[in-house]
Image (cartoon, rainbow, N blue to C red; front, top):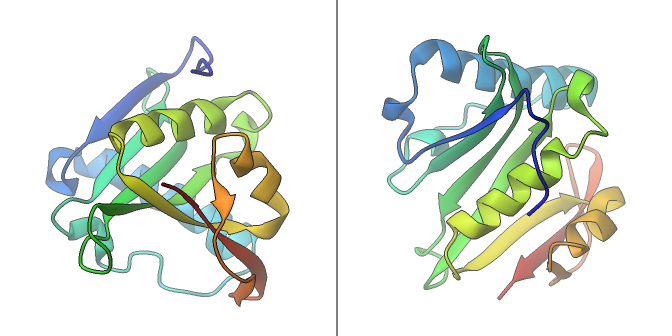
Length: 154
């Protein structure tokens, strides 16, 4: 598994209620900073899915509580038996290029414990996701003006 930089700790919660409110605030803020502001995609990031049963959060943070990166795992078994999705994969600009996203994604894949995993990868990152075993599973589509490729493992 790719290693996190030594100044970061990997944390996980099976329910949003298990995350201190100040930490979830920092997770949500990072998602807003990158997806809404940096990528200029006006959408409701806090879509209610963080509150669903089976929703898991994984994040890497400093000892001081700065969230460097985060991912969300959702139970998608209502759509397909034994399916989960990984989404909201985001790294703070200051932490990019240091292997943080790779370590976090690998941890998320391992947390899915052999279940089929679906992602909607930004198409320019499809090769990067392919390094983790994801393969395209459908046609490219536009989401918020950004080309995405559905990919899965299993």
